[in-house]
Image (spheres, rainbow, N blue to C red):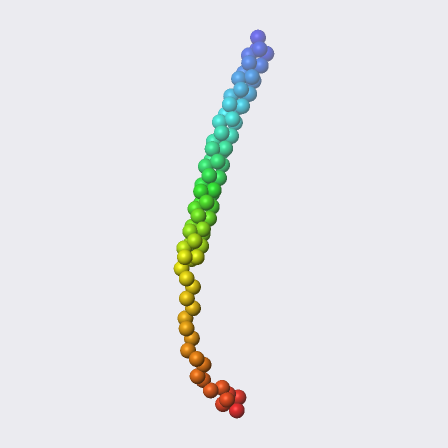
Length: 79
């Protein structure tokens, strides 16, 4: 009789342990997927921002400042 109770207790413990570990794994998987989704969202937002900045930069014509004629006399340099 005692052996039967011990085997039933062992089976009950093993079932509980399996259930507990499966719940912990589900929590870890949920956390992993949430963190992964957050990272993907940040990456997509960064890429979208870079895309919009490049698109905006293409619309702005590049205007280089006009430099005045070089009026400095270099003939006295080095003498």
